[in-house]
Length: 418
Image (cartoon, rainbow, N blue to C red; front, top):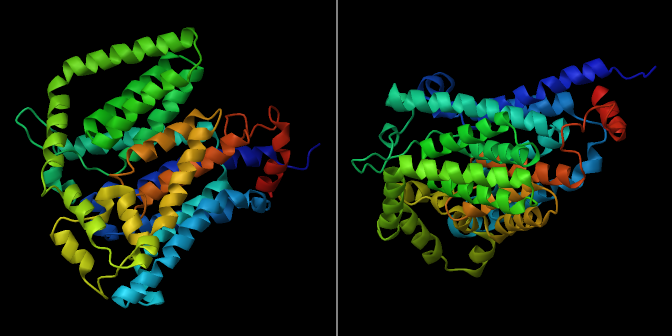
């Protein structure tokens, strides 16, 4: 009889999807809902996020985690790039090393990387957590939109693009996880064309359209087309093509005015010199007077040292509005190159639709989404890196932790059960 208590192992693993869903909610700072942030403070959710990461790493930490230390390579390169950005911060702004560490304390969110390696969630656990989060997210969006728009910090940005031409959209944090859920649902559809998987796909795509974030919408459309292209010709592929095509026709017919408003608003903003992203892009490329700043960036400057960030915010200029360009301006080339290399590896993966799709999403938002500074976006990078590595060695699928169907994982179970 085995000396390992498989019942204890399974019980511990049943909680993984719950913990993942909790991490997602905390990474959005409880969706920035005012009743919660008023009680816990403006960063209360992020504090609990870090505490939860520590608990998970302590509870699920495996003895043989060193075997997978190479999965952390992007994490180390990110840290190197951030630490090197302290140099120009000292030279050009007089910000010392300790002050730079305090200013970049949000980079503690990178701890999600080793935690994912420690808890090693399966595909089913990740998918279950993403689906559960999406249901909760939809509830929050509906309440904020139709019940009380003052529940989030910027209520004037909590309305739909409507027939009167309003250019405000829902800004509830967390839509990136819905895109990840859409990717997981497409992956299931590619393997099993069932009614349940199809309903989840339509549900998640509907949430993305409801939120009307243009980057997420574009990514959802591109990834759906990629799913069809990536499948081998079969009856399942033909059914998927027919369903997506019919759904696209239905959505265009029913929501033609919204699509038109989104398109017109995009064209109008791109031609407006006062548009925040245009101003931010001009600033990023105009303020460079030293070679070291091209390589290492400016650093993240604390308002205590120089109120440059506050002045930029007052002018409507944000590094996060220009994606990787803003990352380059603050942290230099190393983090940007690291993200691009990870995406290239993900796209080059032979069998992993999930890794390829997340890489596509990251690249689609490369010029508009910042992947540094928000716990949600750093969780996206952690998801991506984990899924790429586990799928590469064949451990992400649902049977990876079944001691009967996957005896090769015996050592992994042994380390967890200790």
